[in-house]
Length: 442
Image (cartoon, rainbow, N blue to C red):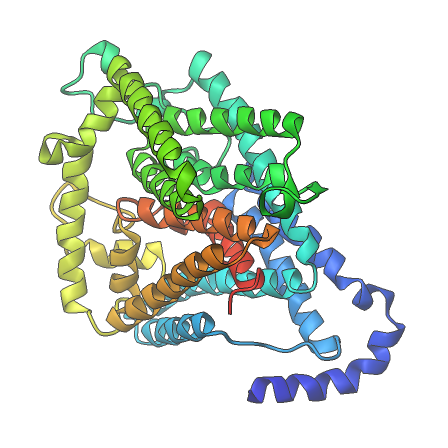
């Protein structure tokens, strides 16, 4: 690659400075700190403040690439599709009728992709830090779970009542928690918790190295603590009342069940099937016996009878028309740019900040070829993750499995919402993709 040739020249020129600089030789420590601060700040900070930590990681990674000898870019097949996606985003922005607003959205996209590059270049030299990233995710989920329970059983602001109550009895109204994630929104909180919950799968496997399951021993005490907070985090997800997160969680669990069934020896498959069957029956009974939860889940299938569903259908219709008129290169990046142009297509009384579908949003903003490239990037990552899981029995298998489940949950939720574009979920998504990329998948 030409860019690697340029990097080598710059690195050779700066090498005398690098060999004498303690900071440059320890720059990975600062990059790691920035990544961890990005993760932790997602639980309480405003979007801009989270972005500052990510930008710091990007700047430090750029310095690392320019100064550390033998640092270079390596493009996998997945990365090539991501690069194609980015090229079409650039072209779309350049041709946008609202260039200034589109540039603002473009710089957000650039930050997310730059953060992904930073995560890759940090983790490839520090694979032992992957487990600490999962630990950080679990701590964030546990922290948010505590607040979710306090909001559910204590005094909670009116914001938690977001749902169509026109066809509900008082006992069917659900108190919707929203944690400390900003801006306060039960759907954002649901998507955020959905992205973190798979991290609990990693914790029991990362401390004692012996010849046991996958070559790693599970500490009973650690397993109990992990199960407790994992189950409580799932309960917190339920308390959000976020139907998109429910759908994402269903497909996440379905994926996990299918993978485990495939990995099990034949003599254990029948027992596993019975356990899954009883578990499904127990969950179904809980849903049926809980009036508010039952009403919330059934509203998913209410179609136009539910105002929230009807609102989304109207937005989808308008966005499909937007796409038809701008199918080649889209309208440009960003929710502000989207909102201005959406006003020309929207049905009266149905204003929207986004397309409520991340794939439709991508198509509207950047065109059909950007959508194809992005879906190809996702598809190859998911396919290679499955291939890796079924062909390896190492701790990296657990890392890839957890990251894969998180990504599947996020992408499934993305069919009915666009909280994916919020930094709390977006940065988590790119970290998970980076873990898959570094864990051995090429």
